[in-house]
Length: 237
Ligand code: PGA
Image (cartoon, rainbow, N blue to C red; front, side, top):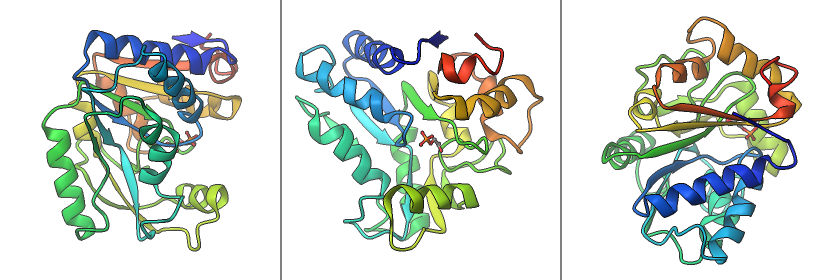
């Protein structure tokens, strides 16, 4: 589904708000990144207007860096809290960040997988320039478990460039593709001309671990929600 670029964040937020009204106890996996940020901004407004009822919803974080201190603004949990969770009114019934401070990375992955295994009604995902989904970097198969991963250079660069973290983390914890594919429904958010080439690769080329997002096409309820800047140069709109 393709939306006008200016309208895209609003349309995605409205769609999510509508979903929450229909299913208030939604168990929802959410990503962080430049793609979902403007959607979250709109969602906060809808929540305050009583149109996005998160009060009974459960939010499960998609991925997290390993090795950033709890106060580091580059962390995924900090970003999601700053942009969405802490601004929702009412707040969600439950928010599950990834316990990278309390547990060893492998144990944090295990614990987070157990939370997601209780069921995800909807996983909202971004698309990395290298075809990653969460931190399922190139080389990840469709059966990838929730685990500790070595970050690809592009993912490391993003952590440094965006937030000035003291040292770019080398590892992360991510929900695995297998767990994401087990969600009832997937929304892949893609915006901006910079994502056009990777979107085309995801949609048109044969499945392979070189571009893990392609495995999402296996899901019967995958919705690719792109803006025209991402979709049109790829010939998709
Ligand atoms: P972005 O990141 O939304 O900041 O472009 C997406 C991703 O790398 O998964």
